[in-house]
Length: 85
Image 1 (cartoon, rainbow, N blue to C red):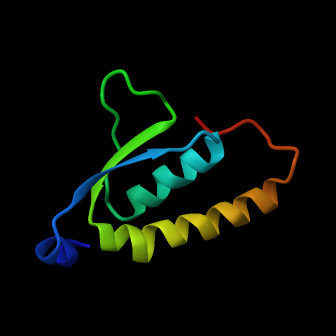
Image 2: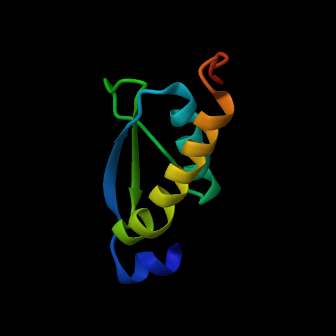
């Protein structure tokens, strides 16, 4: 990740994820890669901001999120329990 930042400068991404389970998953993935999600004052709970390189999002973060979210939705099924806080 740090190597990519030397070649490519990080940009600010805005993620709007309305499902609480998917939002918790995305926060966990960001923290796994030592990225700190944040919100600006006045932004809703569904919005996450993160500064990261475009290639990292395209090649690693987003495909991993989509796969994990698909597995999460399949395991929770239609009877979803309360989301984590």
